[in-house]
Length: 169
Image 1 (cartoon, one colour):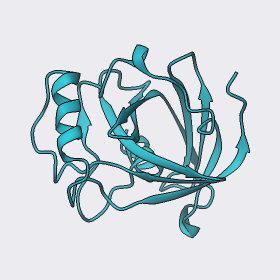
Image 2: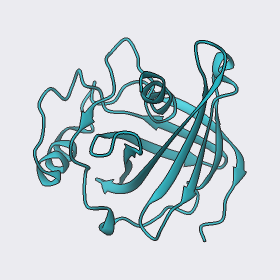
Image 3: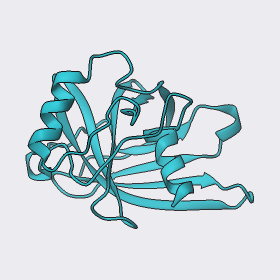
């Protein structure tokens, strides 16, 4: 599980000195309200030299969700694959994915992303900023809406480059 969280943290949220990725028992919204972003689907590799073989494949799962498959070189040098599902919530014009590992249903992590051509930049909210737990998506969304532009809400950015684009269908 640590490798999986670290990889998702790598793309979706790399752990930094400022804190760990925030985890929640609830997503930001209901997945049925989400619309896919056609430029998100594809295979991406992590831009860091020391993690050059780490990739994430994002495939449209249904009309509202994506399937994520990450591959990361573990401490023993063996590639480890992790799988999950996620969907997009728009918060003040920001695209934020609620991601849930298939190994740990009911535990969500989040990342904001921006795609410029074949480059994706991601940020994750820090548990150093978000101290309290939320019992409902409505509460969590209100907190994100109020705080996402404040200094320290997101950890430092990570960059990924597109290896392959997938059609939205």
